[in-house]
Image 1 (tube, rainbow, N blue to C red):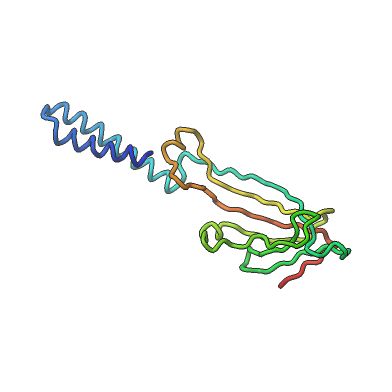
Image 2 (cartoon, rainbow, N blue to C red; image 1 turned 180 degrees about the vertical axis):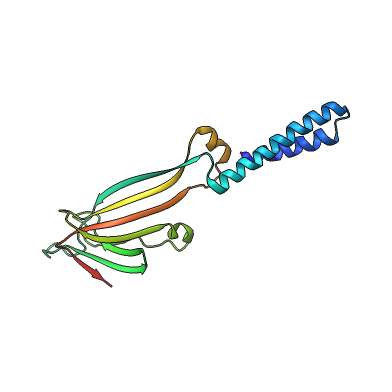
Length: 176
């Protein structure tokens, strides 16, 4: 919406400076429209540069996972494939009754920018069940007014997603 406001203020500035014959009214309306235009441009710049009108919000979610090994294998298993420093593709089951394990955290090649904001690692911990701990950080508008002014059509405002798979000490981690 701020872009429409800036466009409207540009038109108002041009009209007030070029089409009004009364000198005093022209200067007053011209000055007011120029000040409002500059303020609007500064607000847009502040939002784009330092997320003016927004705050970072982090949410955490824990999800239990199950071994990638067949049900008759007594030891839990996590299969990993390292892609880069802080990113692994991991294979495990989402539910105890699943027949086959599924690959998780595979980067989306069509959305590479979002894929760069996501990390997935694992660690062995003193826990009784395996779980994925996901921490998602997003920019969120501070008020409805800020959202109305600055929100664009497809904003997702994702800062980062960090996932850590915690497996019990007795699980086997297989690196491919």
